[in-house]
Amino acid sequence: MLRHMFHRVKGSYDIIPESEETWKESSLWQHFEKTARFLSSLYGFKEIRTPIFEHTEVFTRSAGEESDVVSKEMYTFFDKAERSLSLRPELTAPIVRAFIENNLHQNECDRFFYIGPCFRYDRMQKGRYRQFHQFGVELFSSKDPYHDAETIYFLLDLYKNLGLKNTSLRINSIGDKEIRQNFAKALQDYFKHFFNDLSPDSQRRFQINPLRILDSKEECDKEISKNAPQITEFLTPSKRTFFQDVLRILDSLKVSYEIDGSLVRGLDYYCDTVFEVVSTNDLGAQNALGGGGRYDGLMKEMGGRDLPGLGFATGIERILLSMSAEGQITQKAEGPFYYFIPLSPPCKELCFTLMTKLRSDQKSASCFSKNYTLKKGLAEASKLNAKYAILVGEEELHSKIVTVKCLSTREEKKIPLSNLETLSEIFYA
Ligand code: HAM
Image 1 (tube, rainbow, N blue to C red):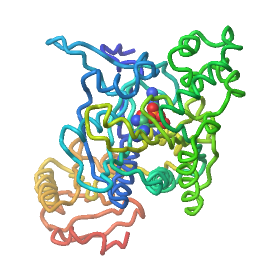
Image 2: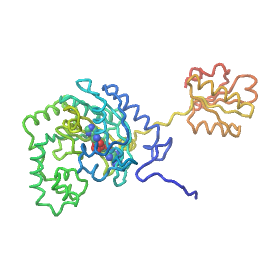
Image 3: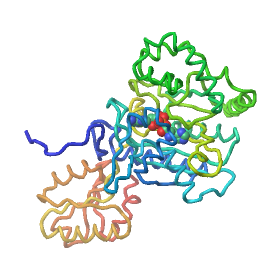
Image 4: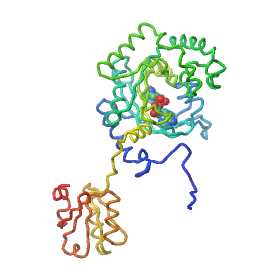
């Protein structure tokens, strides 16, 4: 057996043209990206691309030192000038950084979308990778509940457009800092009775940020958290009204949701509306497809103006896994439109000339370049998913009339070279 010298880094994978695991096929990724970009333009979002690494403080100041993402999962290193840099574990903080740095505030609601890789050093399992990809949106400058509802609707619309049916939306409001401080005290009062049964991580969280216990992935913590107080009990009347407004707008858009009082999200910057969409397919433990919420204080905290923000991010791997679980993956990568099969060495030159000409007219074309046997050439054309095979032998070379085979119908016709560009009309296929 051939021994490989190099392997992928654990927790990463290759996206390739064809794979047993269809979610790794590049055509599916392209389909996802096309859909996400199309919807982004429908909803008025413009693309933003930021570097994959940032100064570490961008993340510690935003997601919080105590969040799992920052405290355990970040790829942090020092560069040659001893700067602490981190591969981005998420994109909200980098987008806020870029918004401030490039002075991007222009509208009553500034809208951005992004697609790209993120990095989290976590235990590998199905749906959880160390390099994964997010599609997300961020809206700045608006404190209008219509925008909360619109953001949630966009996320659900994306899933719908990709053909996903088995999704479920959970939503909550976590109010402001003062509300969360009161809630944290109530949580400590509750959790102190179960302190010894909490996981070691949650025992540490008990002092520093007891809200994080609600977000723990450990079974023992989850069990104890079931009867913990819920943050909704602590909301002030104005926060309650804002949340009710978001729900009312969702109702008017016929969106179904479950209010989940224990949903607090794993990053520190959130306030008010938070939400998560889970897949109800059997994806194992990693069933959160996407999530997001408001983060009104973050821009100021990061040195910018006091402008509100909100958004979502969704994991592309989990979406594609879900599509595969729901049988939504039927696309076969498109092959070349014209596939030339030269049947002897002198025919090859004509095939290459024609292929190059078609390509310069923006038609996809390819050419079989081995063996000069019809059988092998046709087998290759099918394998590549080509539309028409064009057979060029000595006779065709002299007559300038070639044999064209439509690979979907197996129909064959003799066509003059000058008519090659109208094959679709000639075959109706
Ligand atoms: P998040 O919930 O940490 O939120 O991540 C969003 C999505 O990324 C998750 O729902 C999941 O689908 C995917 N994801 C996270 N970690 C992994 C992993 N290790 N492997 C595969 N997929 C993963 C955020 O990142 C926030 N920035 C979302 C946001 C945007 N909030 C406001 N704006």
